[in-house]
Image (tube, rainbow, N blue to C red):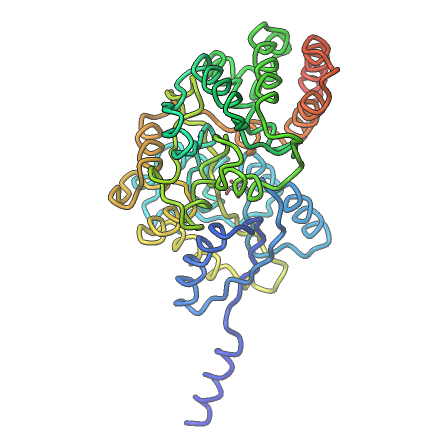
Length: 413
Ligand code: GAL
């Protein structure tokens, strides 16, 4: 009998559950944030088996995910952000998480926007981790103090500050030529131009008239103007390298989602002491959001073997303790309506209070997959990249191309 029990124990521990989790979080803060979840998961005897595909904004990770699914080797879990969640769910590839959502009272505890985001077709299919604010401007407090500068509130402030910085020999903006990083900056410029309705016409509705509009021309022109004030040469670097340049004072400001704040914190830099955080000029009334979510893939294994572990992970991700710890490290804010505000720095608090205002201020990040399908996203980013790289391409020419593209994208729907 004893031997029997012993062997059952051995068998069950030898079969300890393990979940492959495909993600693109390779930086120090991203790792540390993931560790919070992995440690909690391990308490349930479940291993977080990392499948790391480093790639800012997940470009390569999404390609690998597709090939793995096609090859019949879907990971049990994947970081799957944005509109594509609905597409995978349509294919019947995502586990239904309704039970976890019901037991966990997601309808009551999550922000309404997050709750709907988890259920593209009326059923929960992803577990939400955190909310990033993409229209974030970070500034070097030492440089700003030395030159007696206040953070820019609008475009005119930005021009004045950038000119002063230029005279002092300091590039205003740290920036990379990576397509998604150019696009991350540009989407804030579009939002700054004329608010949410115009932004939605460009990135969600892809209205050809909006691309022909003078406001779109102005946003392109501003991108080009900002280029003058970036460090030279502007290199193709990943976002952590750019954040390093900013941290070293090689540029006075940086526009990047607040994951860059999490990263600075993880290197020992303190918010409001070593750097400040504010909204990109003229976007202070908006929250350009990017929601990180984990999807659980239906596995090929017999009896849907991983479902219990996947459900466990989903409920852990949304639990208050993990939410507070994870988001504090990641630089994002909790998906819960009532997080521990005492754990938030001024940057997170500003993000939280604006997001809490609801739908009228919440704007989906185009670059981070919240606004449109993958094909539209990639095509638009590609065109923007060309414009940014080649100063000989005029604004008018680019607008014309965008109008053409918008017409094609609309027809192919
Ligand atoms: C975003 C993602 C963030 C962070 C960032 C940089 O798309 O939501 O969590 O990883 O990319 O890669």
